[in-house]
Length: 81
Image (cartoon, rainbow, N blue to C red; front, side):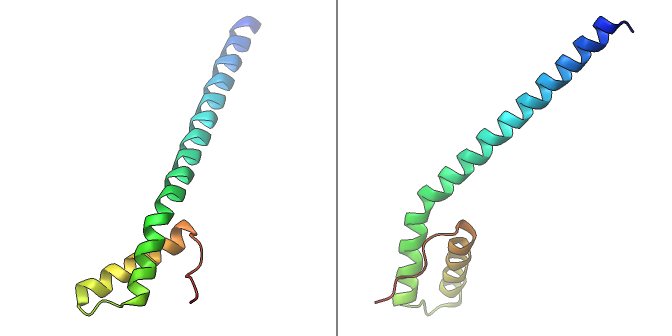
């Protein structure tokens, strides 16, 4: 392969890597924004379940999942009354 061919190959590969990096950055930013928007709902549900704990096994399972989701999303800590 000629020197020009190698240069073209390197430019194409660098462009592809930069494009993939940019796509990854955009996707991660969109995920972060979606998590921040969901925090309000998750926080409200978790606070409600803490104020009045569910009595059924299914309700307790949902409350546990909401609390875990709150931790995963790194939402604000539980409010203290």
